[in-house]
Amino acid sequence: MFENLSDRIDGAFKKLRGQGKITDINIAETLKEIRRALVDADVNYKIAKQFTDDVKDQALGEAVIKSVNPGQQLVKIVNDELIKLMGGQKSDINLNGSPAVILMAGLQGSGKTTFSAKLASYLKKKGKKPLLVACDVYRPAAINQLKVLGEQIEVDVYTEPDNKNPVQIAENAINHARKGGVNVVIIDTAGRLGIDEEMMNEISRIKNVTRPQEILFVVDSMTGQDAVNTAKAFNDKLNFDGVVLTKLDGDTRGGAALSIMSVVEKPIKFVGLGEKMDAIDVFYPDRMAQRILGMGDIVSFVEKAQESIDAEEAERLQKKLRKSQFDFEDFLSQLNQIKKMGNVKDLMAMIPGVNKAVKDVDFDESAFKHTEAIIHSMTPFERKNPDALDGRRKKRIADGSGTTVQQVNQLITQLFEMRKMMKMMNKFQGSGRSMKGMPFPR
Image (cartoon, rainbow, N blue to C red; front, top):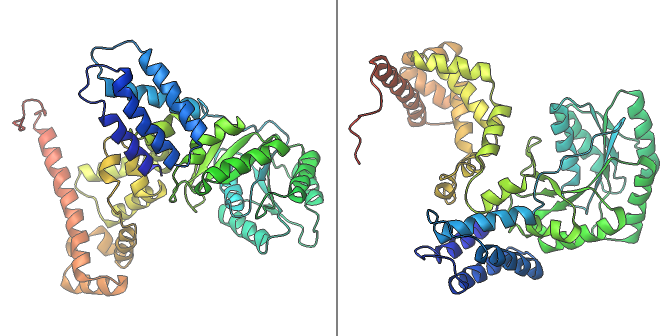
C-alpha cells in the first residue's frame, strides 16, 4: 500500500537535504517531484497541483527553526497537508437509532458484501447485536455468500429467498430487527457493473423506506481515479455519509484515498485490508499520512496488539520464559496470538524505522503452517518435554507433519535458543548490574 508513492516522496525530500533553508529555488524541484508522484499515484492533477501549491505557501511562510533542517521542515508541512487532504480527523459511524440502520452502496466487485460482514463482526466486538440483510437479489450466489460469512462471524442474516423486491425485503428486515432485539441493521444492496438510473432509483427507494442513520459508499481502491468519479455519481443521488476503501492491501497506487475527500467532501470512515473478517480498520487521516511518508504507524500497531493479545496469557508466558520453562505448548500459543494481529509484513511496516527495512523482504506466511504442523504432530508429553525428542521421535514428527527432520531440528533449536537467551537475561538481572557502563562499541 502506497509503497511507490512513499519512495517517490522520500526521493523528493532528498533534494532539500544539506540546504541551509527553504527558498523558492530549492523547493520548486522538490514540489515538482511530489506533484509527479501524486499524479502517478492516480491523484487528480488539479488536486495534486492545489496540494503542492498549499505546501509551497506553508513552506515559504514558515518561520525558520534553527534546530530543524529544511528537509525535516518540509516533511512536517507535507504531513499536515496530507492530513487535511484526507479529511483532517477520523469520522465516527452514526449508530444513534433503534435499531441503527447502515445502508451499503457501491458497484459490483467493490467488496461490498464482504465488507458488510466485516463491519458486522467489528460492531459485534464493540458489544452491538448486528443483523445482516441480503438485498442483492440479482447477483448469483450473493445471498449465499452473505449467509456463509454470517455463519463464520456468528451473526444472523435476514433473507427472503422467494422475494425479488429488495425494497420490501429491507422494510421487512427492519421490522424483524425491532422484534428480535437487534440494535444495528446492515443492509447489503445490489451492485451493478456500471452506474445506471435503475440501480440509483432502487437504492434511493430503499433509503426512503429504511431511513438509515448511515449510508456508506464502498469503493475498490484499486480502481483509482475511476473510484472517485463513481463516488461523485453516487453522492449526487444518495448524499451518502462516508466512504469505505477496500483492497488497500492490493496493488493500489493510493489515488482514491488522497482524492476522494476533495471531490465528494465526505470522510473516509473505514478501510479494508484483506479477505479475513477482522481485516477492517477505522480510517485515521493522520496515521495514513504517516504511513505514506514512511514514518510507520505505531499507534495502530499497539491497538492491534491490545485487541489480539490476551493479557493473562501473555503474563503466563512471560513467567515461564523467566524460569526457562517455555515449551512447545507455549510456543504454539504465542504463534496464535501473533497470527491474530494480521499480516506480519503489514505489522512490521507500522513500526517506525522498520517499515523501510522490510519493504523488499518477502515474508513467507506458510512458515507458520509448517511450525504449527510440526507442533501438532507432537504428543502432549513431547510438547511439554522438548528435551525428550530423540532421533526416532523427530522422524515420526517430520513424517506426520509433512516436513523434514532438519526442519524439526531447526524449530527445536529455536526453542532452546529462546530459553538460553532468557536464562542469560535473568542471570544478568540477578547480578544487580545495569546496562549502564557496559563496554558496547561506540
